[in-house]
Image 1 (tube, helix red, strand yellow):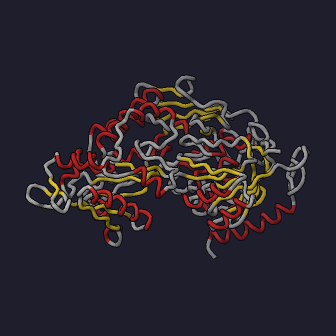
Image 2 (cartoon, one colour):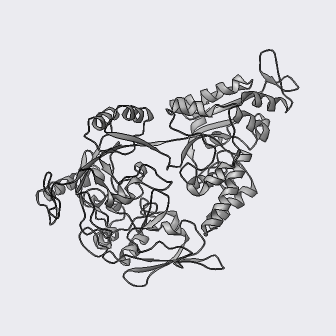
Image 3 (tube, one colour):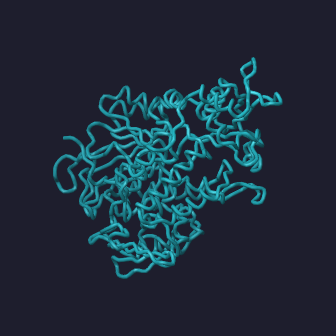
Length: 565
């Protein structure tokens, strides 16, 4: 029996005992609300995979964790960071985010009066200090976050006020102790276990059965392979939730998930994953709707090889622009993504209001095959009787388009290769399997183009930095985000570095505008379309927004969720 299995077996027994002996304020199915208000208000949510509450385990856009532990701040559906357990989010304007001439910073957070853990223990700065210790401990990688490396010192000024001194400017400083870094953890519950056995810490039953949070809902029962039940937390600092109970069902089978939603058993399906499944639900569900969000940072993108490409013409900007004009990206999105995925005209995913004006002014590469042909002819190539382009020596113009091993990505490559063949460029899609998919040098030195599902937006900016280019000098390996195109540009490097150091929002937006224009004009990456993240929402749900800004999750305001009577 493995360590994790051992914890699960013991935990199931404890949960079964706990359900039989409900505590104060708990409510059984079909009973009254915790304050005797009448029939229980209950919804059922479905997730396509098993989940736990470990903080660095990615899970369907982190919808689950804010239900039980929102952190000091959350991002609302307009992309604005709002206080949750904190009284105020620090900003330069309100004086709680201080910038110093030498680059250091200080942020001051104050916890709301009355904030408590689910066992009614007060939530204090001691918990934040403990959380920071875990976040910076490399021996507990599931809780670590690189943001802590920029922190110089954390000082508790009193039990509700904490001062965080930063060694260097960092635009994500206000995300500390939130869902995107490390959520606050209860010192009184976990410190002894952390000190006794760091090795076992990520496998504690705390992360599934015994979770203790501060959020609007608390764990009543948990079966990691089946269902979990959350009860309303009457002591939640922002007010008692309108819902009394949320049932979570983990349904990995797509057909079962679809049937459960269409039959009305499920009120909210999070992370439907399959576009075909989402469209089938959308077209057949009269009691709800399917929303397609683009708050993830994943897009389908072409990477041109820009360091010693073969043929060398790939390094020439007019050629890349011509090939971009030869791809009917709208048709690809309509055919392969059911018409719900927008064409990727910008490095940023949709839904970021502060950049809409900038993006509207960026160059766009419409499907214009005639123009693409003319651009290649202007570079000295001529089409022969067979319609193929050749250079002045008679050598045929050919490019390789490498793809991942998955059938879906390979299919994308064959579609794009076909578009290029239509204008006279010999193009071949090649699946990167075997050595091509495993050897670091072979991966880095692909000759022509690579197509991938990859990171975009702010989290993907490092993919454009020269520091992340795989070279022989670093053994063709880099840590973190890889610059797949091997694009070396000092101007762009400087803009990326400046972006992460620029704290005032207006100035930072201006820097991003210059980055977006550089990428759109120079094409170190060539976006095809954004990947949508579909959710299913029943019509009886109230106060769950369908518009979602980048960085937000539907559960940011879970205490306000309600159902129609």
